[in-house]
Amino acid sequence: MYSNAYILRFAAIITIVCGVLLASAATLLKPMQQENIQTDIKKNILKAVSLLDTEREYSKLEILDLFDQRMTSIVVNPGGEVLPGLKAEDVNPAEEPDLLPIYLLKDDADEVLAYCIPIDGKGLWSTIHGYLALESDLITVRGVTFYDHGETPGLGGEISQQWFQDNFTGKKILDESENLVSVTIAKGQVRDDAKGKEHLVDGISGATLTGDGINKFLREDLGRYNPYFDKLRNQDQNEVVS
Image 1 (cartoon, rainbow, N blue to C red):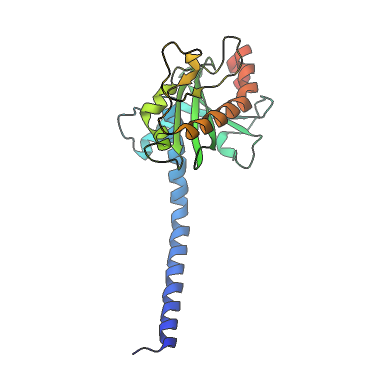
Image 2 (cartoon, rainbow, N blue to C red):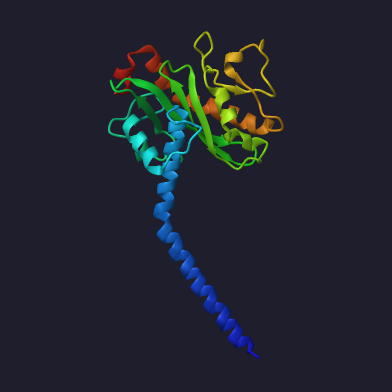
């Protein structure tokens, strides 16, 4: 029969060995984890600007190649001024809230086809992260993606489903007077004769608070970028982008 001292020594050794192995694994795998996170971010940006076929899976290499070929980025300040020499990957919006990254989808002639911005904020149970893309008119939603959250599966968690995100496509963020009104998730289905239908998307049954959270942070995030977008709407876009 083993003594208590032996059992304690054995348990301590096992604990130390397991701790070292776990710490080593975490250290070795961290670069791979970060790389996978960045690939997932790029995948969701490509989804928002409608460059991915939602019916098929893409390899990591396909995502990275497509992103490098079609996407570029800039950084603007809250006053709507482009900050020369900075790209989106150079900033962390969580730590530098006054640096606003924007991803640009361009064609072969270097004309901007879409503008994509990060969106995030509190839902019901979690912080929701996503991307919103606008057409070159900076009024019409090209696409949206909500890809990282902890909302209730089958209820608020439905925000990550393609059928819900497709509801945003074609919606308008400005009213007829060109005031920012954002896009609002309604409580229930939007009727065909609803006032302001062009700014409304169908809500998810049982997920009102998740929708309220998205409405709040989507309006706030669009408001932060609107000084830059306003400049683009009133000037030659390529002149302002550069």
